[in-house]
Image 1 (tube, one colour):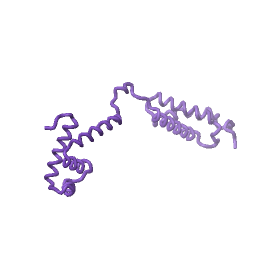
Image 2 (tube, rainbow, N blue to C red):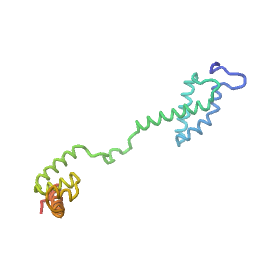
Image 3 (cartoon, rainbow, N blue to C red):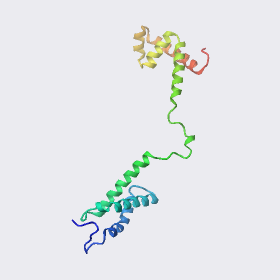
Image 4 (cartoon, rainbow, N blue to C red):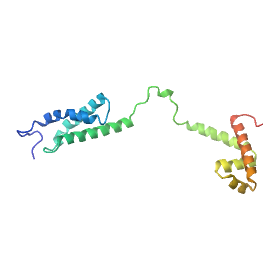
Length: 172
């Protein structure tokens, strides 16, 4: 098998062939990135990798395909790095917090438990059955052994009392 650097009389040296393919590499790079400086960077990275690994090229195979494969792999590597190492925005301190702090939930949970404890037992029971467990009015009425209208009434009062307790407004 001939060496990569050996050339026959009919074809130019491999390095010259690579240089001749730069316009095709630039056109192919535009399929991956849009700005001209990113195209230049991708072509440069492709040429660097190709020249570094020129001994891996087999004479008689398609040089253009080999370079396009290198470019595709270089782009994929850069894309993965960019996604993992994306910079923050300039004013990231001013952006809203994407998730509320967990201690807020603990405080709200404690306040909700205290407010539930202040409700009348029958109101608390209906509120937990319907709002907490998601039971229908009919199912809650069967459990409480009362009419559906009574469940609706108790639930309405329980919600009003709970809203007053949570907001700190005295119950009317």
